[in-house]
Length: 93
Image 1 (spheres, one colour):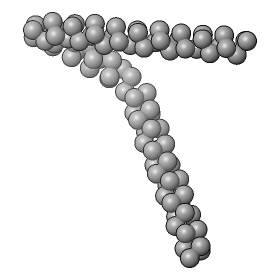
Image 2 (image 1 turned 90 degrees about the horizontal axis):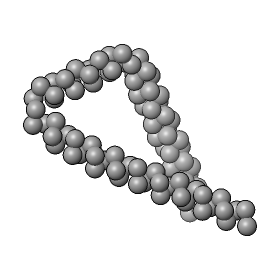
Image 3 (image 1 turned 90 degrees about the vertical axis):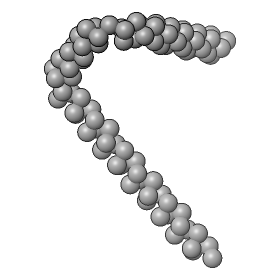
């Protein structure tokens, strides 16, 4: 019975997260369509974005490097798995 309640709670959280994500995308789309009509606002948003990118550039670079390294590790692991499968297939013949 407790497991069923947990499932309902987690399902409710997922539905709520999906609803919030949809509302955010819709609101953002409407906001951006209005902002693009005002060049000064576009320039201001670019300045703000540039400021935050510059301020957090070390964190951004660290995160990107970590992601790239994880991707390389994943590819190497998959390559090893493929080599193992090919070796097993050759042994079976």
